[in-house]
Length: 107
Image 1: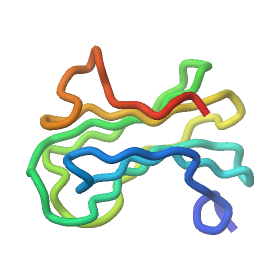
Image 2: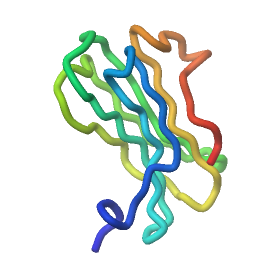
Image 3: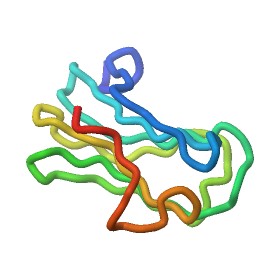
């Protein structure tokens, strides 16, 4: 069956770049794992981004791109989903500072 697909759901999400990109925290109760997905809905600013998932045990997985321009989904690897986790992003437009990334709450 796998961890994604019908075994996974979005826990929390938020938009960046004026709604062009959605950052989502995903969870699979089948695998007890979390990951982050960046979904590009339509053409927008060609800016770079780095997004990640992290849990409260200190595990994290990152994905970085030079431009989030092409339509579609970009996702991180999975981390242990038993402790609380969150999805975060820094990009050239919405959250340009690693000291103040955009994040979901801990879920």
